[in-house]
Image (cartoon, rainbow, N blue to C red):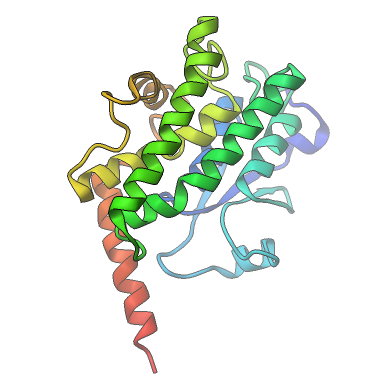
Length: 241
């Protein structure tokens, strides 16, 4: 593999948890670039010394370790991976080449991250809240993103937000697909509904089948089990004197 710079040859490690959509983004980006990496799984309900030392500000995963240098926050990591491994043989770009397209991807990615995580946690029973209201919030957000797909993809003959292959916005929004499916299992109701968002639903199926995605997309039933285990662990921790 031809690497972008001498620094690119350093070992790559990902600190995170398999169930996190934010961690999944990093794995997809590295796989899209053809970059081998070691996955360092965080234990349920705990934060390792490595995680705390690597991200002392937010103390959150994911963390990308490129050699001894930590890079934190999933969207920051996506851009870093795109730039650090730009010259890797056979790698695909993550951010669009056109400045306007890059801005559009970032805008919609910020929108998804602002609107989806909290109501999805409510629907999955991870936190308390009004599930009917949460379902409506997710539906509104997905309707907006369906409109984006129609304009940016249908109108230009694109299969993905990135065109013929997945790019930044595909990775960001696609990381929630497992959560959508887990929420559907918990609530018994459709979340990414073919009736109301047919193009996004078809896009999600293509995204999950992509070679950079299929082996790291978490199974919905396993996500539900993980959520139950995490709630139990947090309740036990809260009950300690």
